[in-house]
Image (cartoon, rainbow, N blue to C red; front, side, top):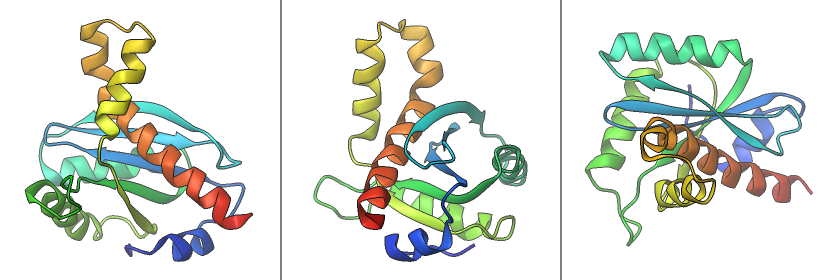
Length: 156
C-alpha cells in the first residue's frame, strides 16, 4: 500500500470501480463506499476496534466484499493545519496496515467531518443512540464525498 497524492490516486483508481472512505477512531473505524460511478458516498457498517491484527483483517474483508480499489482515509489535522497526536496515530495505523493491503491510499483532511456528519444526522432527526452508532460511518461518508467531488473536478 502506498500513500499517494490526489493526482496519483486518480491515475491508480480506474473509473467504474468503488472507493472506500475510512474514519479511524480509537474505538471504531467508520466505513463508507462509493458507487461505481464514483459520484456518491454511502455509509457502511462501523467496525469495532479490538486488537490491530483483528482490526486489519476485518477491514481487508470489508473492503474485499465491496471490491474496493482505493482507500481515502481521513487525516485529523489541527485547525491550524498542523498534525497532532491523532494524525500521528493515523499514520502509524497506515504503516502497520500496509503489511495487510496494497491498495493505494489518499489522505484527506477531515477537519470538521464529524461535526458535519453530526449536523446531518441531527437534521435527519436521528435519535441520540442511533447517532452514536452511525456517526463514524457518516463521517467516513463525508470524508469520501469530499474526495470524490475533488476527483470528479480533477478528471473533468
